[in-house]
Image (cartoon, rainbow, N blue to C red):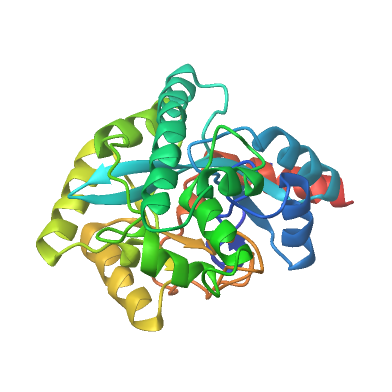
Length: 301
């Protein structure tokens, strides 16, 4: 099996963070893969929130159409009063440790969702939990995004971002405190599953510079290896900031849309900015990458 050159790997159209309807994306896993293919993606990771259930069907469609595919997940972490997300790339979906950890996280989601519904009812928005459930195709994973979609559909707010800003973030009426995994647990589960841990969209977190430094100190100490330099929500300045951080800390760099659906996402799947040329892409270290590219090339012939 030939190993792609460094320049070939860097030039790939890669998207290593996107969501299907198994968590809070709009598209079924199969449809997400087909959209990625239509957009010219060459290497795709499905990274649903705390859930691996869409990987098998996505992988089947990817193989059938010659798309290189890496199994992934996005794990919810509580850190310094914020919910931080850690992406796992190249994970084994059958890992007992990872599966058990994710099952424990999902078990707490139902109670959290019901509490959000209760809080929204207190400010005059009744039946929000039932409404959110109608948008969640996976009943084990009712998220804030599903509440936001319900409030938009009900005419309470014009769009999902406005719902979050007015109701679902810290200090707003529908915010509910919840304890997710620790940073060390999330990285440990990913490593136990043979994957690489990545800090997702770091510019989104409302952390001081001191807390951000502590986040990366603990992340690296736990065995984390990469950061999303290019992310759908990152501005040009934020990409430069986290490119600099990757260089300073010797971290691999990832490229990711965080695509949920055309209705909500700032960037379509596969339409991210390129990585700065001097950064080492995280996919160059994924054991699955060379095999996936070779298999995709074989399927395409």
